[in-house]
Image (spheres, rainbow, N blue to C red):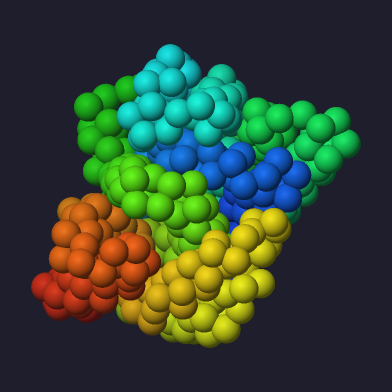
Length: 449
């Protein structure tokens, strides 16, 4: 697909369906490996292994967060440079970003491999529970240099118009993960380390495939002799910081929550929190996919100074996000028992009862979560990293930690309500930010554009 034609001339509603719907499916498929991972581990290895992977999961996500920072942080200036007709600049940013992603994978993977025992012990785990979590984390750390690029490449493929190709690649990654994990756990009866190996192998295969159009020189973006500069580093860090900070802050919050839950309710409470996180892992990719897949188009038109077109595209994004979120409220609140048993097949009655209560309270999150999510994406797409970072950090860390103390008298119910309260406060913050940048967002189009 000709990405320039798609971004600059396709009617906004048609553009939404051409870019956003495949993007949502793509992100859902790429995130589905985590859900499948949780289902298979819970079904074949039991409750202790399921709790262990949930304890390690925040560190696994941190392992990918730096690559995500570079991928998203480079995608925004690349799109804006292409919209302004600066192809050489776009190619240089792309090349430098790919080199940085590989280097970051080696660095962060090595650190996590060495520190895995210490990190898990600091969470309060011991015995078999801790041992399984360390195994799981170390496999991801070892594979890090060859797996982390897959998320950034997804952004670059969409910029180049390979929207359906990106979607099919992410579907392939989930299918490979599912097949390999079933083979390793159900057929070979290997341990929790094999679950991490299956997903990592699928990601490595898909990363190699994703590089092919760029290596062949068939894509809009091409590799060139890299010219690193402070300006490129600043652009990447500034534009990637909102997503990076969201990932890091969110994992810090998860680590804090898990540490509290281990002490309040042991493995049972951690397992229930894991069910909530896996439920979120199904909904959030839909929202992220819809908003994120429109960023190249929004950035391109912002760079071309077609502001009315930017606003029209974003209206579709906000409307679709609200529909998905409200539907999620009814699904989570309406089927808590089925959702719990999907992940913890041998759940005792106490886990079922606690999880059902938690899911019904957690469902309230998506009444308002869509608004801050779409606003953050909008700010990032038009290269406004500061307001995007404010929303990101507040949603992922500041507000949840504040609400931990405010809702402490409610016990475990306060933990389950934490995300719903965070979503309401984040929506208020997003409305204030939109109002402050209102004039700039409603500039007149450049006549020449």
